[in-house]
Length: 320
Image 1 (cartoon, one colour):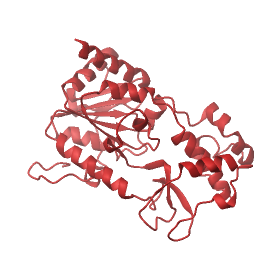
Image 2: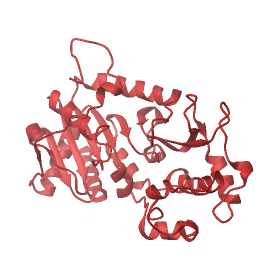
Image 3: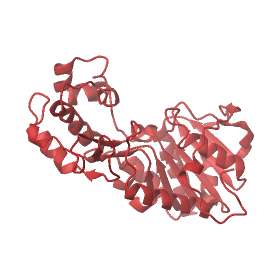
Image 4: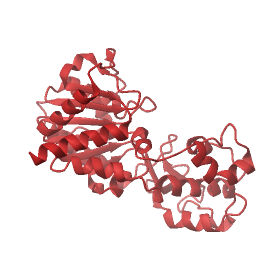
């Protein structure tokens, strides 16, 4: 079990994680408007709301990583390296086998700014946060774009498990510290020529002198720094508080790329705690465990629309 009621110890993030998946997924055939009403009612009755946000949330809010947006903003790199198979979208582009560090950081500084520091797609995030006003909130996220913080959620209520587009680390993970690199990225952006930054701007590890990398969980060298562990501790405390309270797990755009971080643990938590409900919003992956019965609501729909409709329902109830 995730929680042991006989123990007052806080539950660590590692204990929360699970590979245990539901074997009774169903796509609910309840009418959309009824699902929205049921979801709003569950949130109204809850004291705590644990948000779980995946890539689908950023996409629903307007973030673009491929298609015409990528063609427009990464034409320089497509011309240099060709379009396929890497230069198709931001995710794939990051894995290109660059010939040198100047070229690698030429791409990554541009990508990090567009996908993180300069990304401004927060209206939907703010709509959701406004709708949840008065609830005890915490966000568990696999996104690295800081969109909920930009929308007004205090950083002390956020645990971004997979890193940040704003920070860099030793590529070998030789020490447990990360570094804010936004201003460095902006300088790289200004001085990049033909896909390359000047050699003097290539970051070096201040401890081992080796190469630096983005602070993103892509391999075993990912650095969990002091701030990461502090966020994990706050998440642990929130879990321990909400276990005996009326709680909603509000899952936003989480698929099956990293289901062991949010999707599977949310299902397990709802399965073990009868006071906890699961609301799963997704464009196409909102199937829920049938065993959860009325405590699970899976809405397969455009998330921007479903979040807007849910917020409207919650707003109506506050006016009554």
